Length: 387
Image (cartoon, rainbow, N blue to C red; front, side, top):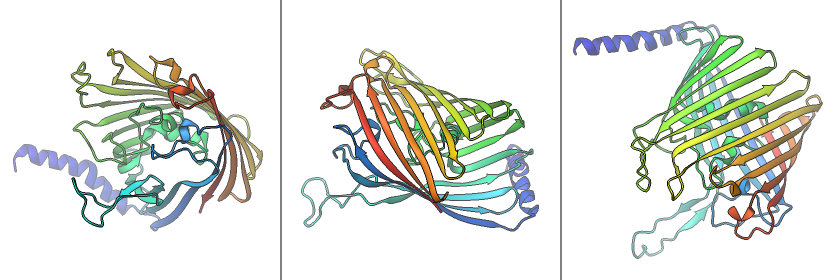
């Protein structure tokens, strides 16, 4: 082994292995294991003649179905806090994404072999990582593995109703024919911490393909955020990410095409029982080009709030989204208003969340050829279970 290799090995050993051994040796509390589950169950009824675009089935050949019960997600999480500074997480997620079962060879299928659609609630791995607290310095956390991305986590925590709807960027990212390079979890590493009580930071590097796919190129996605808290109860968060991509053969204008997301989140919690928040983003992708080689951006903004009417029992929430899938085709613009109640009659582990969605499309035919109006209304009763 050459001198250079020895120096690199010593550096890795000194910065990672020794601090990890020290963290394990400084255990002051016994290992703590926890198991938890979260389930989103909806009763869905469409009050207009067609289902809204953001509730379209996962299988594009299936028609919109009104008057149905549907499990949207089911999470099962195992966490093991080994010491004060080391924790592991393993989370399974499940949804009703259709799978095709059976085998059919090219040409004449084997006798007795058929293809059928499988709609079972299928589990898959969503999180699998270790978390190292007080990494190198106090109040700094290091994670490696399949972890949450920085993209949605803060806005989702302030919105507080992932059970009812995803946040703006998360919810619209692949439902209007424009696939935004964003995922709620990915494989990589992150570093988050607090510089002062007024400033928090986070940086992350991941594969960029998301938790549902293997790495598909040699590039990585880099992201970073800064959270400014000038006074307690008010914060502003700036976020940016960049991912280089493989060129698209049809549009060979860029020798090194890339995709960048700019995002701004804010929250206001200075009034008792009231939480207000906002989200704004712009997504620029060199591969998003029209047939005339004109690039377009995807953007949107959202404002939301919730107010506690009866402590730990009843809250009201509202949200308004404005979404622009294509800056060069404003006929695709849409707005969404969500209104609802959050009722916990027995315990916070069981909540009934009736909610209604009002859609306004600039031109409904941009999404549904049979649209008879530029609006949609959907009613849901969401059953939120956490145990």
